[in-house]
Image (cartoon, rainbow, N blue to C red; front, top):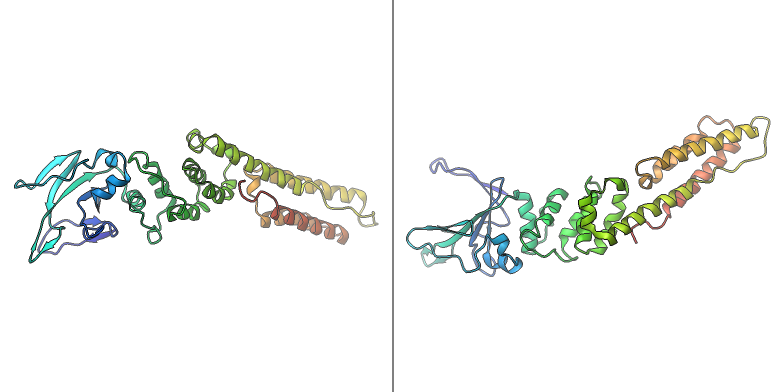
Amino acid sequence: MENLMPTQESKRAVIDVSTTFAPDSRVKDAAPDTIIYTSDGTFFFCHQTILKSRSSNNFAQMVPASAAPSTGSSGSSTRNHGQVASTQVGQASGSSIRKVPLLAVTVVERAAVLDVILHIVYAIPLVNRDPNLDDILDAFDCLEKYSLSAPDEASDVWLQMVKKAEAHHDVIRAFAVAASCGMDRICVQISPFTLSTPLREVSQKEAMLMGPLYLRRLLRFHMQKQTALKSAIRAPPAVHPPTPTCSEGDQLRVRQRWELVGSDVMIRPTPQSVSQAELRSMFENIATGNGCQQCVANILKRVQEVVEAWQGSEPSVME
């Protein structure tokens, strides 16, 4: 967005205008004929032909089904909750500028959300916009309202969603949105990021949105990862023949410590999200302070086996 700074002579207010959907943005050499004003005070200059061609309900009935009316001598009129005003963003003809009637409508969405919506409508890449995940997901929530089709799988909006979902608290919502659009490849890419979210936190709305098929696949994915982790850590380190400095009782205490650490891992809210580094650190701590070199060697060997087993556990993504 850019601020249009008035001169001191004009004494006009500062207004925020979209840099992508600006007064001089053109589609097939056509100037904008619609202004959309967001709830946080930003103007977007759009084209009715594009909005109507992408939306089956004329952008929530805010864009007239017929062409924008001429302003005539009065210079303004109202239709479909929007105001039509004469402005000089039209086309130049010789030395004069032909005034083009602009439909002005107000929406409840914030500028960042409408920006994503319009990028989807105009099929413009988001690569230079860097929206946050909340804005992307809020934009998808508006697709039904404006009767817009979800972007196809090749759209970079999905790439942005996957990129932002990795370190976001609302990754389940992102998964649900992708599932609701039938974007299987996107769901698979997002699925590893869901492992850090307890499945009990999946809301009824999110479950309904992803549907029974993807909900079942997500549940199975999490359970398979938990099973793989439990299998990887189950066996304790190997034992060795008793020595004067390390009895069977000493080695039993090593086993008990191993089982205790394993229990600590599995009772986490999301054990399936534990990292290899965490596993290594937790189990290698068992060797700390142990004076038996054979026990230490057996512990470290077993820890390495656990890490390798967890690294190679399948599935690494949702099947």
